[in-house]
Length: 104
Image 1 (cartoon, rainbow, N blue to C red):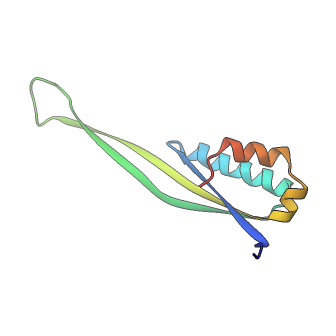
Image 2 (image 1 turned 180 degrees about the horizontal axis):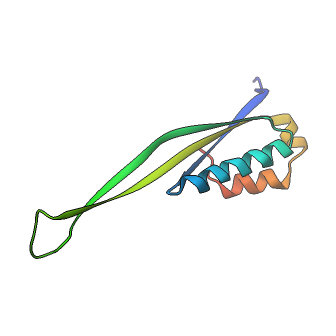
Image 3 (image 1 turned 90 degrees about the vertical axis):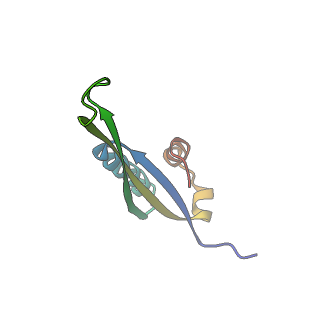
């Protein structure tokens, strides 16, 4: 059995706030670059938009409605690493990052 020299970790992030999502991606990239892992890629996924239609008045004026929307922004971080290097030098920052975020 052959061991792959490079393996990938995919971290999927979702948020209603795109600024918070971008800062989280930047923090993860800074943590990985501080631990000599240079191959980090951010992939933007399509934004989900859910629209809710609500009657303004429950008893009269059925034609009068309000529309509200919720946008869910999504990103995937692909982290490529050498598995032999990670086994020898496991940093606590990487372990916290992997525990905090769901690995896809």
